[in-house]
Image (tube, rainbow, N blue to C red; front, side, top):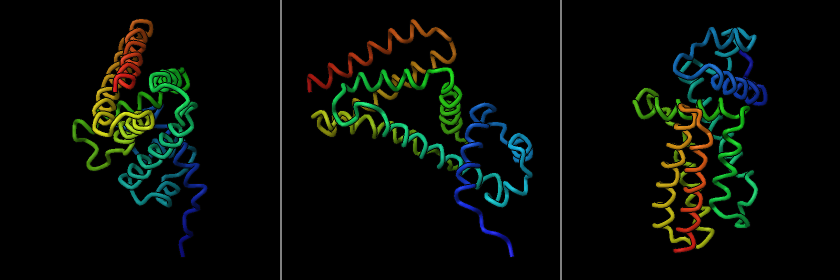
Amino acid sequence: MARSADPHHREELLDQIVDYLAGHGLSTLSMRPLAQHLGKSTRVLTHHFADKEALLRATMEHLDERHRAWMRSLPGLPGTASVGAIIRRTWDWQTTEENLPIARLIHEIEGLAAAGKLHGHIPRLLADRSEFVAELLQERGVPDADAVRISTLTNSAYTGLQLDFLTSGDRERVEIALDQLCALVDDWVTAV
C-alpha cells in the first residue's frame, strides 16, 4: 500500500519548486531537471503530484497563497498609511535583488496566461492584486465602483512600470513615474 503524501513535506517541496521556477522560469518546466535540481527523484515528485499538470496547478496555488500572505503582512494596511505609500512599499519590496526573481516569474506567468499557454492554470494572484488595492481604497472611503476602476488602472500602470524596470534596468526613470502614480492615487482618494 502506497504511503500518503505528508502535507508538511509537500508545502516545503512547493516552496522549493516556486524558488526553482523563480530562477529557471516556467516555460521550460520539466519534471526530470526539476527533480535533479531539488536532489530528489521524479518518483518523489509523482508521489506528491500525479503528473506535470498537477504539479503546475499546485505550484500556482502555492504561489497565490504566498502572494496573499505577503500582501496581508504589509505595514499600514489597517488604514494608517496612504494607498500611495503602500504601493511604494510594495514596489520597494518587490524590486529588491532577492525578490526580483519572483517578480520576473509573476510577469512570465502573466505573459503565458495572456498567450493562452497555461491551459486553465491562471493564478489567482492576478485578480487578488486588483481586489487588494480596491479594498484599500474602499477602507479609505472610496465608493465600490470607483475603487474597482482606480484599482484596475493602478494595477495596470504598476505592472507596466515594473515591466519597464525589468526590461530597461532604468530604476531612476521608472521610480520617478512610480512616485507620480502613487501621488495620483492619493489625489484620487482625496478627491473621491
